[in-house]
Amino acid sequence: MEQSRAPQPRPVSYDVVIVGGGVAAGATASGLRDAGFTGSVAVFCAEPHVPYTRPGLTKQVLRGEKPESAALFKPAEWYAEHDVDLHLDSAVIDIDLSGATVRTGGQTIGYGQLVLATGAEPRQLPLVADLGVSSHVLRSIDDARRIRPLLREGVRWLVIGGGFIGAEFAASARIMGSEVDLVMQEPNVLERVFGAEAGSWFEQRLEAQGVRAHAETAVEALERTDSGIQVTLANGKRLEVDEVLAGVGVRPNTGVARQAGLDLDDASGGILVDQHLRTSNPRVFAVGDVAAYDSKLHGRRMRIEHWDVARAHGDYVARQIAGATSEPYEQLPYFFGTMGTWAFHRYVGVAMGGGVVRGNLDGETLAIAYLDDDARLVGMLTVDRDEDLDAARELVVAGATMDREQIAADELPLAECVAS
Image (tube, rainbow, N blue to C red; front, side, top):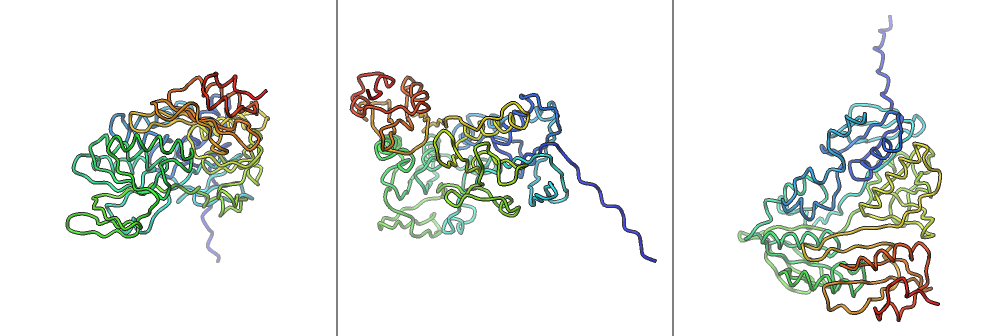
């Protein structure tokens, strides 16, 4: 007689399942409730932390000036208070599009609509990873916890990479008293993002605080010795350090999307989404760092790794699911950052086109307008020049054609530098 099989538990099901633990996930969950959505919502976070923002991890949170709770997108209690089921340490490892389910380590969950906010992960350098405990990346709260005790006098840091992570970490390490050598392939920090003029301006301020920059070179070898880590650069220079941080960018975390068979963007590596941030499957959205979206505003596909864009994506998709909007996503990218305690920079638009410096680069303020080949304003970088940034918000959206000479002369307000 055939033995009867025990009935299998039916999958738990939610109207909306959000996968991710960053600002895009938090913004989607809070945006749903703000938009009046009353259906069931669950957030699945791979980390043991409620959704949090990452900018402070290279600055105040890293330096211990603010508690880790300051990085949370919403306080932990918010989720229960707003009837959002929060699953921590619950990485989604499988998506079944035909069955509309996701699978974690021990559970299968059904969804009405799925939002992928899986973010990005740091690029690893095998040369650095081989160092073991002295090898670091900085992407998570746990990374910041491990690094924080090592930011002190007497600790020598090698920072590899001249982008946001490398430059901001180098500034924080110097504030905490560490010695810092920063190695980059570019001529200046942040040059790939903002261009040579801005890169030189920021690098001068880093060096004035004691950061030793090694430009247009790379790390060729790392060898552990009794006195520290011997570093050999491609230009022949040798250094000795105690700890190494690799800040060489991130890659979009598309593993589960690839497994599910969702379309990916070959150019950026992100998940391909349309002007409504919808993937190749109509019940699945992608938001934040992982989303390669068809931008109506810019007329091309974009994938932007900044927290305000992730927040805006999450809020937009939440309103779409709640029925509060049916318009395409059309928000001007904006971000800000801090270089140590001495340069608060803000940017609107996209980092493309040629930069035109307003005035000169000798002062403590900075304004650079970025124009495309038709002299239309596409972006604006400022430090303590809020009037220029505010004007640029409207001019970029309007597609304004600018007068390069008037911008450079810096005698007129930016709004009056529109070409006649």
